[in-house]
Image 1: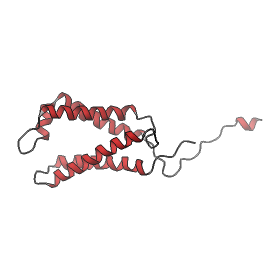
Image 2: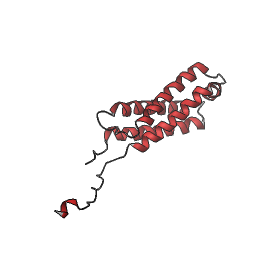
Image 3: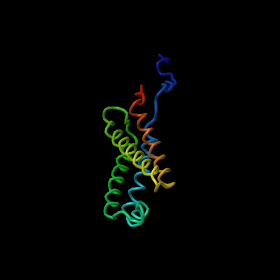
Image 4: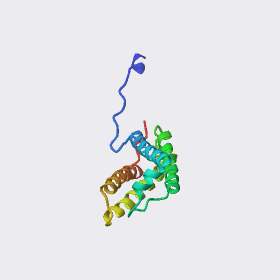
Length: 145
């Protein structure tokens, strides 16, 4: 009878298992910070985003900030959820879509004549995030025993 109550060791993690909390934490913080900057300092962000001396419209920058802020909050509140399963798939697809489109758009801009170091850095960061979310899409984390 005593054997039934003996402590047992938890099973070893399976190959291919991946925790989803770090990616949602990183993505949420990046998107929230970017959204807050675009919402509360639209003129400065518009000058940074402008090309050939023509700043972007502050209204458009604030709309962009609202979208980034909303996606960041989605990630922040989903950080304790498994995003590889059927219920977390929309969060995964939304993030993968955003980061993939951002990486390809910024990469194309960086390849042009106006390509700046900032565009390369942002394209690389977005590409890494897209690859991380793509890995979760193709290889979902193992279910807990």
